[in-house]
Amino acid sequence: MSRQRGFALLIVLWTIVLLALLVAQFTTTGRTEVQVAANLRANAVTEAAADGAVYQAIMRLVQGTWVPDPRLRVVRVGDAAVEVRITNQSRKVNPNTAPVPVIQALLGNVGVDAGKAAALARAIVDWRTNSTKSLSGGTKLSEYQAAGLPYGPGNQLFDSVDEIGLVVGMTPAVLARTKPFLSIYREGDPPAPNEIPATLAEVSATTGDPWYFGSTGRVMVVMIDATAVGAKGGRFTRQAVVRLRAEASLDQAPYQLLTWGTPSE
Image 1: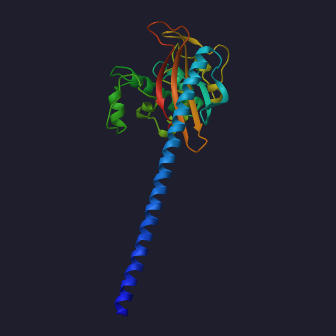
Image 2: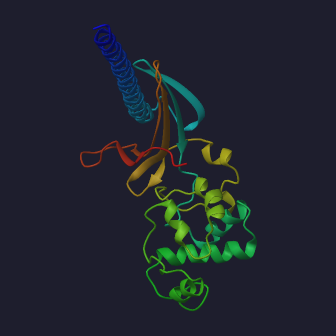
Protein backbone atom coordinates (compact mmCIF):
# COMPACT_ATOMS: atom_id res chain seq x y z
CA MET A 1 0.00 0.00 0.00
CA SER A 2 2.81 2.37 0.93
CA ARG A 3 4.53 1.51 -2.34
CA GLN A 4 1.40 2.52 -4.31
CA ARG A 5 1.19 5.77 -2.36
CA GLY A 6 4.84 6.50 -3.11
CA PHE A 7 4.32 5.83 -6.80
CA ALA A 8 1.25 8.07 -6.83
CA LEU A 9 3.22 10.81 -5.07
CA LEU A 10 5.98 10.47 -7.64
CA ILE A 11 3.46 10.86 -10.46
CA VAL A 12 2.03 13.97 -8.79
CA LEU A 13 5.50 15.46 -8.38
CA TRP A 14 6.42 14.80 -11.99
CA THR A 15 3.10 16.30 -13.09
CA ILE A 16 3.79 19.43 -11.05
CA VAL A 17 7.29 19.71 -12.56
CA LEU A 18 5.88 19.24 -16.06
CA LEU A 19 3.21 21.89 -15.45
CA ALA A 20 5.86 24.26 -14.10
CA LEU A 21 7.97 23.73 -17.23
CA LEU A 22 4.96 24.34 -19.47
CA VAL A 23 4.06 27.51 -17.59
CA ALA A 24 7.66 28.74 -17.84
CA GLN A 25 7.68 27.98 -21.58
CA PHE A 26 4.39 29.77 -22.17
CA THR A 27 5.60 32.74 -20.12
CA THR A 28 8.87 32.97 -22.07
CA THR A 29 7.04 32.64 -25.40
CA GLY A 30 4.55 35.30 -24.37
CA ARG A 31 7.31 37.70 -23.34
CA THR A 32 9.13 37.09 -26.61
CA GLU A 33 5.99 37.74 -28.64
CA VAL A 34 5.29 40.91 -26.66
CA GLN A 35 8.87 42.09 -27.29
CA VAL A 36 8.61 41.29 -31.00
CA ALA A 37 5.34 43.20 -31.20
CA ALA A 38 6.91 46.15 -29.36
CA ASN A 39 9.87 46.15 -31.77
CA LEU A 40 7.56 46.03 -34.79
CA ARG A 41 5.55 48.92 -33.40
CA ALA A 42 8.70 50.96 -32.68
CA ASN A 43 10.00 50.36 -36.19
CA ALA A 44 6.64 51.30 -37.72
CA VAL A 45 6.56 54.50 -35.65
CA THR A 46 10.05 55.55 -36.73
CA GLU A 47 9.36 54.72 -40.39
CA ALA A 48 6.21 56.85 -40.32
CA ALA A 49 8.11 59.66 -38.58
CA ALA A 50 10.89 59.60 -41.19
CA ASP A 51 8.34 59.68 -44.02
CA GLY A 52 6.54 62.58 -42.37
CA ALA A 53 9.80 64.50 -42.02
CA VAL A 54 10.52 64.06 -45.74
CA TYR A 55 7.18 65.62 -46.65
CA GLN A 56 7.75 68.40 -44.13
CA ALA A 57 11.11 69.13 -45.78
CA ILE A 58 9.46 69.21 -49.22
CA MET A 59 6.85 71.69 -47.96
CA ARG A 60 9.48 73.96 -46.43
CA LEU A 61 11.61 73.86 -49.58
CA VAL A 62 8.61 74.82 -51.72
CA GLN A 63 7.78 77.65 -49.31
CA GLY A 64 11.38 78.84 -49.30
CA THR A 65 11.87 78.58 -45.52
CA TRP A 66 14.47 75.85 -46.04
CA VAL A 67 17.21 75.60 -48.66
CA PRO A 68 19.44 72.65 -49.51
CA ASP A 69 22.68 73.01 -47.56
CA PRO A 70 25.00 70.88 -45.37
CA ARG A 71 23.05 71.83 -42.24
CA LEU A 72 21.64 69.05 -40.03
CA ARG A 73 18.06 69.84 -39.04
CA VAL A 74 16.24 68.07 -36.20
CA VAL A 75 12.44 67.98 -36.23
CA ARG A 76 9.93 66.28 -33.95
CA VAL A 77 7.32 64.00 -35.46
CA GLY A 78 5.18 62.55 -32.71
CA ASP A 79 7.48 60.97 -30.12
CA ALA A 80 10.34 60.56 -32.58
CA ALA A 81 13.28 62.87 -33.22
CA VAL A 82 14.19 63.04 -36.91
CA GLU A 83 17.51 64.27 -38.33
CA VAL A 84 17.05 65.74 -41.80
CA ARG A 85 19.74 66.44 -44.37
CA ILE A 86 19.00 68.03 -47.76
CA THR A 87 21.55 67.80 -50.56
CA ASN A 88 21.22 69.80 -53.75
CA GLN A 89 21.73 67.65 -56.84
CA SER A 90 22.38 70.59 -59.17
CA ARG A 91 26.16 70.36 -58.84
CA LYS A 92 26.25 66.68 -59.73
CA VAL A 93 26.98 65.28 -63.19
CA ASN A 94 24.25 63.55 -65.18
CA PRO A 95 25.85 60.58 -67.01
CA ASN A 96 22.96 60.67 -69.51
CA THR A 97 23.75 64.18 -70.74
CA ALA A 98 27.35 65.01 -69.86
CA PRO A 99 29.84 64.99 -72.77
CA VAL A 100 33.07 63.01 -72.73
CA PRO A 101 35.31 65.87 -71.43
CA VAL A 102 33.05 66.41 -68.39
CA ILE A 103 32.91 62.73 -67.47
CA GLN A 104 36.65 62.40 -68.06
CA ALA A 105 37.33 65.36 -65.76
CA LEU A 106 35.12 63.87 -63.06
CA LEU A 107 36.92 60.53 -63.25
CA GLY A 108 40.23 62.36 -63.01
CA ASN A 109 39.00 64.18 -59.89
CA VAL A 110 38.32 60.88 -58.12
CA GLY A 111 41.79 59.54 -58.85
CA VAL A 112 41.49 57.68 -62.16
CA ASP A 113 44.61 58.11 -64.31
CA ALA A 114 44.24 60.16 -67.50
CA GLY A 115 44.35 57.29 -69.99
CA LYS A 116 41.82 55.13 -68.18
CA ALA A 117 39.59 58.14 -67.46
CA ALA A 118 39.44 58.98 -71.17
CA ALA A 119 38.61 55.38 -72.16
CA LEU A 120 35.95 55.07 -69.44
CA ALA A 121 34.37 58.39 -70.39
CA ARG A 122 34.05 57.27 -74.00
CA ALA A 123 32.63 53.90 -72.90
CA ILE A 124 30.00 55.62 -70.72
CA VAL A 125 28.87 57.83 -73.60
CA ASP A 126 28.91 54.78 -75.91
CA TRP A 127 26.56 52.92 -73.54
CA ARG A 128 23.89 55.60 -73.66
CA THR A 129 24.21 56.16 -77.43
CA ASN A 130 22.12 54.04 -79.79
CA SER A 131 24.76 53.12 -82.35
CA THR A 132 27.14 50.27 -83.15
CA LYS A 133 30.28 52.37 -83.52
CA SER A 134 32.55 53.04 -80.56
CA LEU A 135 34.06 56.46 -79.86
CA SER A 136 37.33 54.62 -79.32
CA GLY A 137 37.17 53.07 -82.80
CA GLY A 138 35.74 49.78 -84.01
CA THR A 139 32.44 48.40 -82.76
CA LYS A 140 31.11 48.68 -79.22
CA LEU A 141 30.12 45.03 -79.09
CA SER A 142 33.66 43.86 -79.90
CA GLU A 143 34.99 45.76 -76.85
CA TYR A 144 32.62 43.87 -74.54
CA GLN A 145 33.45 40.57 -76.20
CA ALA A 146 37.17 41.24 -75.85
CA ALA A 147 36.67 41.93 -72.14
CA GLY A 148 34.91 38.56 -71.77
CA LEU A 149 31.60 40.11 -70.80
CA PRO A 150 28.45 38.06 -71.53
CA TYR A 151 26.53 41.15 -72.68
CA GLY A 152 26.92 44.16 -74.91
CA PRO A 153 26.35 47.90 -74.38
CA GLY A 154 22.88 49.06 -73.41
CA ASN A 155 22.52 51.53 -76.31
CA GLN A 156 20.10 53.52 -74.15
CA LEU A 157 20.12 55.99 -71.29
CA PHE A 158 21.13 54.83 -67.84
CA ASP A 159 18.19 53.89 -65.60
CA SER A 160 20.31 54.33 -62.48
CA VAL A 161 23.81 55.33 -61.46
CA ASP A 162 24.49 51.72 -60.43
CA GLU A 163 24.00 50.66 -64.07
CA ILE A 164 27.27 52.40 -64.90
CA GLY A 165 28.93 49.44 -63.21
CA LEU A 166 28.10 47.40 -66.34
CA VAL A 167 30.13 49.64 -68.63
CA VAL A 168 33.21 47.94 -70.03
CA GLY A 169 36.30 48.92 -68.04
CA MET A 170 34.37 50.14 -65.00
CA THR A 171 35.37 48.61 -61.65
CA PRO A 172 33.46 48.55 -58.34
CA ALA A 173 36.14 50.69 -56.70
CA VAL A 174 35.97 53.43 -59.34
CA LEU A 175 32.18 53.38 -59.35
CA ALA A 176 32.07 53.69 -55.55
CA ARG A 177 34.28 56.80 -55.71
CA THR A 178 32.32 58.32 -58.58
CA LYS A 179 28.70 57.66 -57.51
CA PRO A 180 28.45 60.53 -54.98
CA PHE A 181 29.14 62.98 -57.84
CA LEU A 182 26.53 61.54 -60.23
CA SER A 183 22.77 61.90 -60.60
CA ILE A 184 20.59 60.82 -63.52
CA TYR A 185 18.00 63.37 -62.37
CA ARG A 186 20.10 66.51 -62.73
CA GLU A 187 18.52 68.80 -65.32
CA GLY A 188 19.83 71.69 -67.34
CA ASP A 189 23.00 72.17 -69.31
CA PRO A 190 25.96 69.99 -68.24
CA PRO A 191 28.63 71.80 -66.22
CA ALA A 192 31.95 72.67 -67.80
CA PRO A 193 34.88 70.41 -66.88
CA ASN A 194 36.30 73.10 -64.58
CA GLU A 195 32.93 73.46 -62.77
CA ILE A 196 32.82 69.88 -61.51
CA PRO A 197 33.07 69.62 -57.70
CA ALA A 198 36.33 68.07 -56.57
CA THR A 199 35.10 67.10 -53.07
CA LEU A 200 31.84 65.91 -51.53
CA ALA A 201 31.72 69.14 -49.52
CA GLU A 202 31.57 71.07 -52.80
CA VAL A 203 28.75 68.81 -54.03
CA SER A 204 26.51 69.68 -51.09
CA ALA A 205 27.47 73.35 -50.93
CA THR A 206 24.77 75.78 -51.99
CA THR A 207 25.76 79.11 -53.47
CA GLY A 208 23.18 81.67 -54.51
CA ASP A 209 19.74 80.68 -55.75
CA PRO A 210 19.20 76.90 -55.46
CA TRP A 211 16.63 77.03 -58.30
CA TYR A 212 17.93 76.61 -61.85
CA PHE A 213 16.42 76.22 -65.29
CA GLY A 214 15.56 72.67 -66.26
CA SER A 215 13.39 71.08 -68.91
CA THR A 216 10.18 72.17 -67.17
CA GLY A 217 11.12 75.67 -66.05
CA ARG A 218 12.87 76.56 -62.82
CA VAL A 219 13.51 73.42 -60.83
CA MET A 220 15.38 72.20 -57.79
CA VAL A 221 16.40 68.55 -57.50
CA VAL A 222 17.35 67.49 -53.99
CA MET A 223 18.12 64.35 -52.02
CA ILE A 224 16.45 64.23 -48.60
CA ASP A 225 17.74 61.89 -45.90
CA ALA A 226 15.54 61.63 -42.81
CA THR A 227 16.69 59.44 -39.89
CA ALA A 228 14.11 58.92 -37.15
CA VAL A 229 14.85 57.64 -33.64
CA GLY A 230 11.83 56.70 -31.53
CA ALA A 231 11.38 57.46 -27.84
CA LYS A 232 10.75 53.75 -27.21
CA GLY A 233 13.41 52.44 -29.55
CA GLY A 234 13.48 51.91 -33.27
CA ARG A 235 15.51 53.63 -35.95
CA PHE A 236 14.71 54.16 -39.61
CA THR A 237 16.19 56.21 -42.46
CA ARG A 238 14.18 57.29 -45.48
CA GLN A 239 16.00 58.62 -48.54
CA ALA A 240 14.17 60.35 -51.35
CA VAL A 241 15.19 62.26 -54.46
CA VAL A 242 12.66 64.97 -55.24
CA ARG A 243 12.19 67.38 -58.13
CA LEU A 244 10.57 70.66 -57.07
CA ARG A 245 9.12 73.22 -59.47
CA ALA A 246 9.20 76.93 -58.72
CA GLU A 247 6.20 77.68 -60.92
CA ALA A 248 3.70 74.84 -60.53
CA SER A 249 0.71 74.70 -62.90
CA LEU A 250 -2.49 72.75 -63.30
CA ASP A 251 -0.67 69.96 -65.15
CA GLN A 252 2.53 70.12 -63.11
CA ALA A 253 2.60 69.41 -59.37
CA PRO A 254 4.91 71.50 -57.18
CA TYR A 255 7.03 68.42 -56.53
CA GLN A 256 7.68 64.96 -57.93
CA LEU A 257 9.15 61.99 -56.08
CA LEU A 258 11.89 60.50 -58.27
CA THR A 259 13.15 57.85 -55.84
CA TRP A 260 11.80 56.59 -52.52
CA GLY A 261 13.67 54.06 -50.42
CA THR A 262 16.44 53.55 -47.90
CA PRO A 263 20.12 54.40 -48.35
CA SER A 264 22.12 51.70 -50.07
CA GLU A 265 25.04 50.37 -48.09
